[in-house]
Amino acid sequence: MGLGQRLAAVVFLAFFGTAEAGVWEVLPAASWDSATPTPEKVLGYSWGEEISDPEQIARFARALAEAFPERVKLLPYARSLEGRELFLLVVGKPEFLRDLEALAARLRALGDPRVAGKQDPGELPAVVWLVGSVHGDEASGGEAALVLAQYLAGSRNPEVEALLGNVLVVLDPMQNPDGRARFVASTRQARGPEPDLEPASAEHVQPWPGGRFSHLLFDLNRDWFALTHPESQGRVERMLWLPPQVVVDLHEMGAEQGYFFPPPAPPHNPLVSREQNELWKLLGLRLAAAFDSAGVRFWTREVFDAFYPGYGESWPFFSGACGATFEQASTRGRAVRLSTGEVLHYADAVAHHVLAAFTTLRTVAEQKQAFFASFLDFRRNAVREGQGKAYVFDGRQEGAAPLAALLAKQGLEVFLVEAGGFPQYLVPQGQPLGKLAQVPLSREVPLPQEFAAEQQKRVAKRLPDEIYDITAWSLPLLWNVVVEEKPVAVPAGAQRVGPKGLRRGEVLGEGKVAFLMPWEMQEP
Image (cartoon, rainbow, N blue to C red):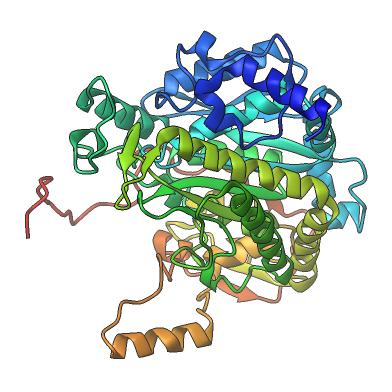
């Protein structure tokens, strides 16, 4: 380490103090702008000492945006059912943020090959979305987003300046503020003056219903193409407005499990492209090197597959982005003792997510052309392969209009035409998001044959299957609509359908049957 690096490291640690060294030491050393807000000043504690509740996260995000308005934009996108604001922190070069609306419009135009043709992105930045804590009790991702935002906005480091010349960073620190509020409240109510390291202690065991779910006790990580909740609807609308080339979803898993990153386990959805698979491998190699260097245990290619399209990592696949799930071992409190006798601290969990997120940004900045090429090729192939084909459904069916509106909310082009004297909806496959249309509207998205055969062998041996989640889904079945795939072009003058459908709480048809169940959990 040269003298300049040593001096930078001294400035870095002197600014934040030793209490936070574990969180900051995974990032390149830097000097700091004196205007940089710190959690000690804004919140009264260092990163990792406490689990921030939604109000504290919002307070620090606002402080950062106010301190660096030329480098940080705070963009609200929804309100939860309990009234909490969800927002994005967009961090980038001042010239990118000066007119973010115009930059977003250029990226949207670039992503439509029918308009842009085969253009080079040139000086445009790759957009990387880092989203955290969609499960409210998986808290470290949200905290890591704030650490990263603070570092990118306030540090003065040539590498950071070069990185922000190639990447626009979009941080969503709390996708599920209602669940997070419930989780933080329960851990604070159950704890003592010092962390209880026993995994079975009250500090680590949440009372029903826990913090994983939203206000309506729904798993928001399964809502990306159903869009039944305001949090999901607002996020998808913003993602369509500022289309990403990379989306990373920061999660937590069991305390003993270390850290997971791509490549994911089989099966992979067959619509995931070869280029996206190669980018998973590239990210995996870069992350493995970073985690090896830091001495952090990790694993890949097991448990978490890439088949179901409704996750925060997988829905973006079908718009051309490289999606990735990162899973950090959870403390479910301030610290927990592992079976080895080691102690995992919340600050460790935050630091590991920061390391993975920054390594991702560094990789995308260095390989911007590869990530843009994958994104643009995916969309060009969707237009080319879907030319002259469309999904068609009779507009007289009771669920047809809300299904059409739901597809439009996904950013899909949906048209209403007259056919034989009655209304008909057309969803052309030859559009930039044509693969996204295929996912929920196809009659079947088949499992890879080799994988399916292996699962049958496992069943015969009375072994558990290797499928993480759902293997069948269908929006037409959900809305009771018959959809056909036909060789048909959209006629001139067809009416484009807008994203308006059922209002929240509105029900179609006349209810005749209901199910009544006790809410209590019954012991087996």
